[in-house]
Image (cartoon, rainbow, N blue to C red; front, side, top):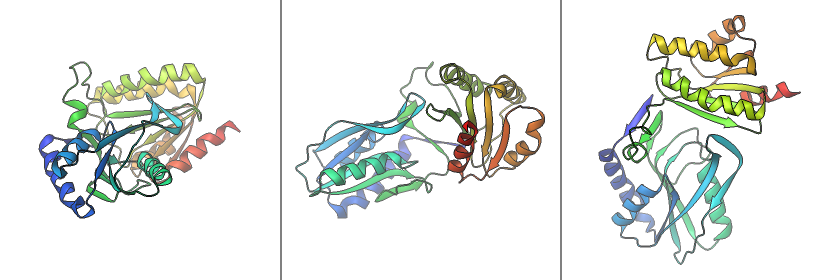
Length: 277
């Protein structure tokens, strides 16, 4: 499912964070761009902090996940207490990377972190957070200022891992025809670039289903068009769909299929990677 995070919710939650961090008495704010910029501006106003700096990280090159996080921007602190802000601790990789970088390079400064949302599967828990994220969060600043053409209602996140030749598909709501057209537009050029895929991972806690019969038909056509291009297909989900796919899917596709629990994503990727050997 997808949660629409509107301005009124943002205003309320930002006030909660402002009150929470007052005991810390931060003297400067570091925004993690771009997700943390809107929150950082609001927090700086609410706390009357003029020292507002930012850094930017890149874990993805468009939809391709990089092997290492890249950091852009420099910090110049005169403060002794710096509050690091981002919108969400999802995987936690970005926050963990930045906090370690800051603590290693500015040993005389106390750093604390805060986010609007925190996912319990994150490898890093912020010092302060407001909401637990149990679904895909769509922040108003990500959608409200897009053109009509850009503002497509896509419910499928596509992650392309070039080094491992793995595609991860993360459904966030009921799937539509547009989702499979979107996935096809990303995966086909990726396959051309890397050759035959080692595998595809369907990664979702509860499979959301399809918004129409035509979407289901498009999904079947998508599988038919791509199953010969992949070696293994992993369902990483707590939904019954994963077990069903493992039982009956081999009758319809040439790829080897295996089901994994939702918290076993790394195991699924290792299984797919072992197909190279």
